[in-house]
Length: 231
Image (cartoon, rainbow, N blue to C red; front, side, top):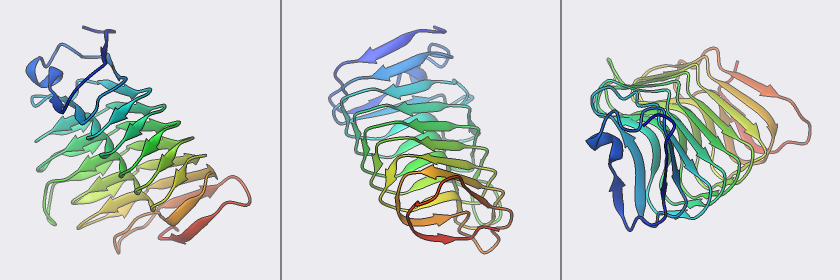
């Protein structure tokens, strides 16, 4: 019910399907996983994708993925993932849309912990070069911890636009993308860089049409492997 917090002290593996089985049960609720060895923690609402679930990790180890919202079609929108500590072996994703869905206005906030794979604000996996699969207005904010993989404000099969990455102290061993698209546009994405070292490259976008991407640098003495695709 609204406002309820669920704590999972032990999840031996597989996925947690509370929202899939009960689409209305966890709306506007908070989900806290303290220890979830080998588990994939996912908010899944196949009907609407807008359960608005907050997934929070404060300690322990998650051997699978953490995803705030997941839909096979439609929109994964306005979901939140917060990592304060602990270890995550799989990806961390605010909202994930498979097939031809969209991922919009999802948020990932990391203030500590060890993330051994990639981080996505919004991930739109489906669609083709002609249509579908858009990631827009998603946000990733990093103020602590270590990301061993890469960071994507928005990742899409078609186009990724108006996504934001805020770098405020975390260490990223991979690259950082404001937006990443497999087939089409990466426009209007923003990276705000205040502190933290980036071993890879800072990219505004990755496609040939990467207009309107912005890098805002607020400190001196920062270090990155390279900087590319900003205007």
